Length: 209
Image (cartoon, rainbow, N blue to C red):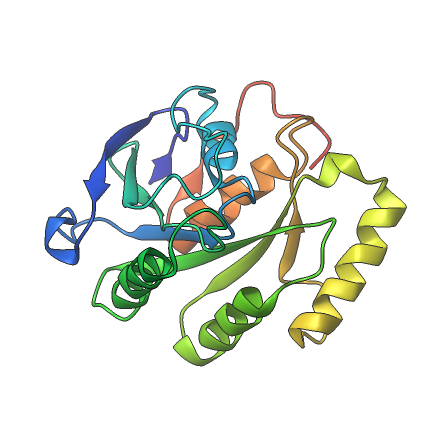
């Protein structure tokens, strides 16, 4: 079977685990800092600029957000961490929600952890990396905002990030750009394969992948 990412729709919000939709579809979980570009990436995957609201105030999204992809799988956007303007007890609550979700019995088939390619991973990223390595779940590191760097700079950053994360090489790092669509088609294929599906290529899929 195949999946068409352009048939992606908003499904709903959950502030608690008991508000999550039934676990009847494979789930692709997205995690990362609150300003790393998760909403923009969802919009790029769906070819729908206004689907996921792009906040001008990092940390504004404090729920688990679900998107239905062609009735075949779900994109699950976890609350971003690093809310500079949010009270510490509120930060703890959002972190607890994420922890509960990742340790629940949801049908997670892939975790995408997003990093800004221009910066080195922080403490939260390193903690997430430790969890991913111990979880036994498939995962992929997605490096956003790749258009801000040249290809040579991207490769140097990938090497540095892999070293910081304790990875043997850069094979688990995928650089993407919302602006020039670098890596978007590749990421669609990675997501589809994790769910046991084939990606329906975009008619205007660029060679930048």
